[in-house]
Amino acid sequence: MMFDARAEHTFYTAAPATAATAAELDALAADVRLWVPDPEQVFRGRRVLDVGAGTAPLGALLASRFGAASVVSVELVFERLRAARPWVSRAPALRLVCGDVFSLPLASGAFDLVVANSVLHHFPELDRALGEIVRVLRPGGRYIGREPNFDNPLVRFGVFTRLGNRIFGCEHSANEYPLRPGAIVSAFRNRGCSCSLRFFWRRLRRLRHPVAGVAMSVTAERRSS
Image (cartoon, rainbow, N blue to C red; front, side, top):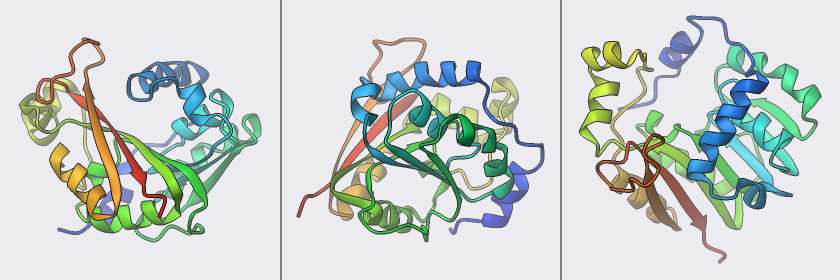
């Protein structure tokens, strides 16, 4: 199975893209705290790459509220990235780049952190994507991401069945696939990184079970040598 860039473009241009509002960034900030403990401490002064950025709400958040020194938000679909332009004037640390995660137009070792919000499960060729993500991290740099927990049968039902889509009111890109937690850990380790997962559920904050949790934070670190 290969990533279908045309299908991705068709799906994400079916409706006009709009920039995130301040209220939407408030909600995103609360969500980020579920998968990045103490984000101010984590991101302050860091060079951050935001991959699969969409309309760059995460990049705007890190640049405007969490003190990142610089944020580069990379997105494949130009129309989505164009909608994020209003945030560049409000958050000077934010830069928008239209590009492909399988061939990032960025220098090796350029970033302290790479972040992604529900992105890895869009890449059936995960090893290729991680090769580029690890390449642009400095030695000792970290990947921090959030992913759906597809070990949870309710999550699989909600994403990959028509009935689930109707019940939960969601539509999904043709490139999404059920990337399991163990496969993520193995893929990062194959690229020479340590990797750990933490499971959570927004509505039940204390629920950390690896099957019952509906989402997970993924933290991987590139070895220093």
